[in-house]
Length: 464
Ligand code: C2E
Ligand code: MG
Ligand code: MG
Image (tube, rainbow, N blue to C red; front, side, top):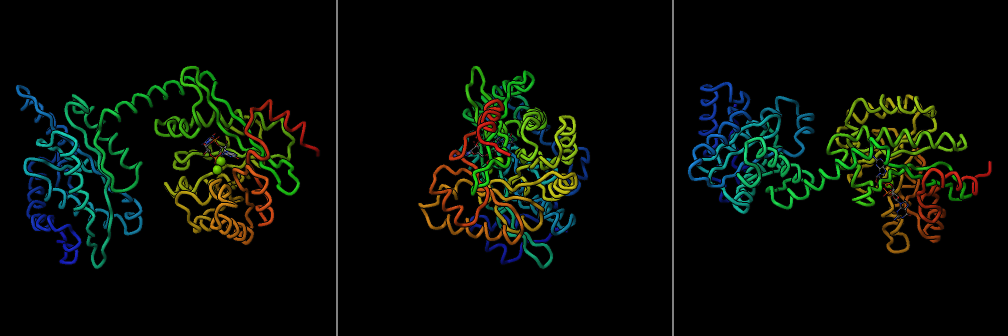
């Protein structure tokens, strides 16, 4: 059950940590005995304590220090990319990795500290002797390095990393639940910054959190009061400059906070779990506006990452446009590669359902984020939107032009439409046309404007 690290694996460990692996078996077994003693607070898979055990230990430290309080820390670690590994190698291999992670962690945490498995691929620590940020960061760095060595799975070696969040009592929370919440917030920050990051909950994070909460309240109220608006920006045929459709872009101006960018508030609504109600308001308004346009024009609507991990998304969207009376054939949804990546299986199902109903799909911001050409093969899209970063690079660097050429040629072969985003200069439009890019969008043609101004734009420019 306990696969010891091979000699090669040990050489991959930082030199001061080699001794750690030698203690792994011994302590791993010891934690098994713990579970046998107290199954209520134990994790049967790894032999560590569970989340309840962490709560008990935090309470015990607080109680012990009641007469002479001294700060201490807790930490959370979450494995990066564990799910794809689990999917690829199977759940038995996933379990084996979790056991090995547990052994390494319990072998190298300092004396007096403890490790628990909080659930899935998340581990927790109680660190009674760590009382400030640098101490927590030091332990985080050490644990991260220990987990960076390969894991033996039979004849194979698997590498993964972990992200960490720490919180110091009593600054980050007086009671155990607040403390865990702060550590979870710090962990979430680490995850957002990429892989293998370490964050200690701080005053600045607390400040940002309270600002985000203020923004959240204002946004929730704005949704209820119907104050979040949608603007529209034309997507044109670059040869004729004829409008083909409009992209809907969310707009919110709060009386106290002023203009808040959609990037910021869409992300907030995702994080705080009300993206569905925001998206519903926006799509309802956008669909209503689209009904007053000539029927050959499409409406392009952005979907967020969180929506692509919710199996109910296709059903919800279809209901909204059905109620609004907009034909699915006039709707296109813009999805980014990152959104598709979050949970490829669910995304694939959502995309299939949407396509079956006649809705079109565009791959947004192509070329940024986790670009992969495989994505174009695995998922069925109708259009690719080349990100503004490449368009604004035209004339400045050769690389952008070559990349756009390659994307246009590839889309031609795959029978996909291509839209260039963020065209601001006449020269950019000329180069794009010469390359063979047919559709364009950008300030050169029109800025996003509200539905009344969109009507006026159509009256000026649309001739059937
Ligand atoms: P996006 O989907 O890539 O939208 C294009 C962004 O480029 C828009 O920014 C648009 O105003 C801007 N833009 C268009 N032409 C030009 C140009 O020529 N130059 C420059 N500099 N910018 C141009 P915006 O409206 O600030 O939206 C930013 C992002 O926020 C969007 O990027 C999209 O990811 C997200 N977003 C906006 N509305 C929604 C929405 O209703 N739902 C969701 N989920 N996301 C939205
Ligand atoms: Mg878009
Ligand atoms: Mg875009």
